[in-house]
Image (cartoon, rainbow, N blue to C red; front, side, top):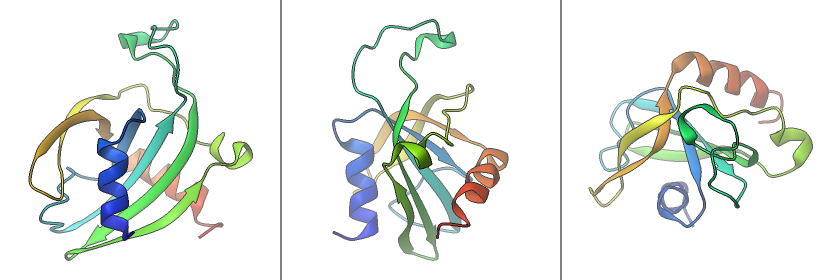
Length: 129
């Protein structure tokens, strides 16, 4: 499976995910350059669990990093090991955001566009890529 297909499946699959991106997510055109981290969350209760905004369980169980640039998408990093994944936390300012999928459909998912968080996450993966 190529990176774009994998990213599309993560965004539309059954797992709860949060996307942290440098810019707006447009997987149809892949225009410009964008870095994305997909944080896969622990399955289970959707109860608020004391978290603001009622988002529920926020424990990350898998992290996948993608970059698209000039029409090409690549996967740069993946971790499902607790020692690596525990370094990544869901930003508290996550909100619903539109993401254009490879087929042109727009999906509303959870995420945040934040270049500062992307820089922090990239620093955590740079020694592993």
